[in-house]
Amino acid sequence: MNENAVWTIGRAKEEDFEALHRIELAAFRTLLSAGAVTGLPEATGKEGFANYLQQGLLLSAIDAHAQPIGFGAALVMSDTLHICEMDVHPDWQRRGIGRALIQRLLEEGRGLGLAQATLTTDRYAPFNAPFYARQGFQIVRGDEPPYFLTRILAEEAAKGLDPERRVAMARPL
Image (cartoon, rainbow, N blue to C red; front, side, top):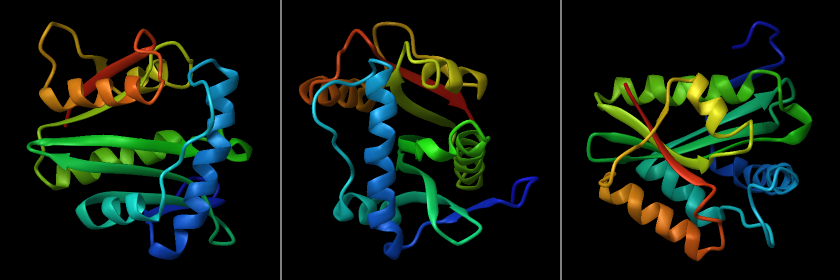
């Protein structure tokens, strides 16, 4: 629970999927205004959320009325927790919810005995790569990032995300 007891973080439930979908679409507008994305909004569907719930981690931040206001989704890939998606509804941003979601995902990864956490993000939007850097992530440098990160960056480019803006980041757990 946070210091203000206005929101909490816990495991998401299947009945949260529609709200999480709406949060992701609302967060798209913030990314669009920062130039981090272009085109039509895309968001995770029920099948994708179910996969996170069954095969990885799906956490949600909920308000005092038990309504989801943010979420973090991750999958385990070998010895790595890959953070696939993290969004906070624009009405709830800049209150520490994103930081708390990341910290909880990292705690869960440590609890699973994983060695590192990774993610891909926009390198320029101040609430993306710079935010994650403050959480201990560093840009993956060199010619040979892990195969799955290379594949994810290629998939993002195929969806229309500017490869010049995308970056893979990692941190030890």
